[in-house]
Image (tube, rainbow, N blue to C red; front, side, top):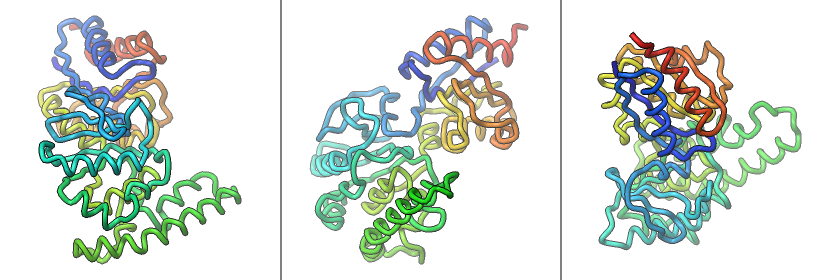
Length: 324
């Protein structure tokens, strides 16, 4: 019997340590089980922490050399992107002929530490020219467009529509980005001759990460669903191919995480093979109906830290791979 486990993260436990804990706890609870684990990262700015490969610092950005290309992360363990530093790093990579030109920028949906438009420096057109040689992929965990009824500003008010101060702030944010996007949309359309009649600011995912996704897309970046791309690159589809149970290990399971975290590819890949998909989490905010809709058959919760993770994994192992 084989178990495939996608390790996204666990509170108080580094990613590579979480992987060792999952493998050890499962085998101790259910001897003889073949456990195959992959590290996914959460799709956010620190996703490169789960990548095994040489690391270096460039323009206050950490660069990890991976099989898929250069995966970037904020330097110094920072949890949010500094748009100015990110823009400088992209320029530096573009002018270095020794570097591979594919660049992966994990954004998740974390607002940057600063104004997203600072990514462009003094001019979008100058930045587009500087980054012309780069093949940029931005990983996001939100589907909203930049502007409009379902855009970035609308998401800020979700669940708090009665807050007048928040409504005024959201309206000001919408107007500010509308003015910025008016010029940028025209530049992108003129240079790329987009076949779609829709503006770039109306496209899905451009409103992720406080507009930083839009700013990267204006440079020509592809916006991809982070969890699915990371799962594919990490080899999860191959690991699931012969698995009898598929597990996602995540710190928090929310509705957003169910759509855009490790649970999403786990549920989809398990359903394609007709095998159970299970989530081990430290905190769940999702009901059974939503779990079923996502293809998840059960959850096991545990406390933060190594012991909490080991206990939750042991209970999942005894439930889904009992001794025979």
